[in-house]
Length: 369
Image 1 (cartoon, rainbow, N blue to C red):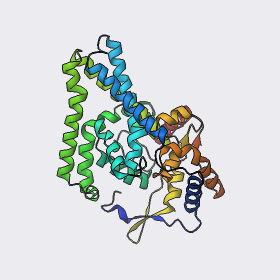
Image 2 (cartoon, helix red, strand yellow; image 1 turned 90 degrees about the vertical axis):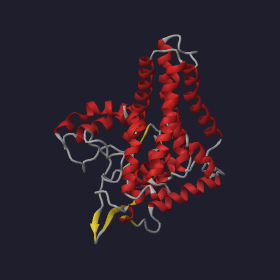
Image 3 (cartoon, rainbow, N blue to C red; image 1 turned 120 degrees about the vertical axis):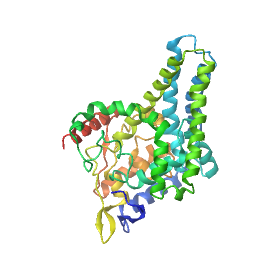
Image 4 (cartoon, rainbow, N blue to C red; image 1 turned 180 degrees about the horizontal axis):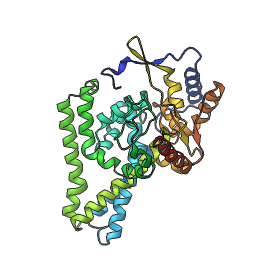
């Protein structure tokens, strides 16, 4: 269903005194009266430093050979780097590439380049995440977060095959290789696809520039993450490769477990646009579409919320991408009360494990219906 021009997809108008207009007013009033900047506070800057340290400190220890005397310590350092990847990706880079870390674009751009440091390409990320996922959440053919490989069925609107009956078992294995696939071939595939759909040019990047940049960043990434340890750590190549894979399996599985229960849930509507006089139109307004396709979880877990960048408050994140995640916990009650006021659902799971259990149940359901 992917249209050549995404602008032909239209959401219903939000209307005067609508849910979105009301919740915007309430949240903006709260931030103003409490004299809270929507951007990062001191705690956010400290978190950014801690997450960066969680990734770089183990790397320095393993590449200098200090942590290479014992193989279990050596592999433990790679394991810690996996968690550092999660922290940088979910709690630092994510806000910066949304433009919500700082009011200064140059600061956001600089911090956003942490994605390149851990092997990604921020131009592709902004297209997939900011444009496609946040605008067309759970719309098959437009949201690449659910348009995955054929072996995984994340929407009832996608074709179902016999092997999907077992996806609730094997999906976790694919989750483990998510970042590994991303840091190897995914960026190249996306660049070519985005060129075809005129999405690269909107980022003022040509396909040649994108391929060149991706290649340069990948050479830099694999140079420091694999080649340097091979020469400097004193460990055999197979131990380094195993550690590298351990890092990615850790990050891939955890990040997938953070993002997937936010949308691939039985409560989500997975609605599609209908063709009206040549224009694809959605029945709901954009804000309501986001509300009915998003689920929060573990609202009382401050430790989890701190580490994953407030992404357990996924509803607030989707409605207020310009607000730094450190403020989500405070604005969540406002959003929840406003949704109730308008008779709209506010999907929420009590714990992280409960959300994962419900997500696994949805994978099982999608394999049978």
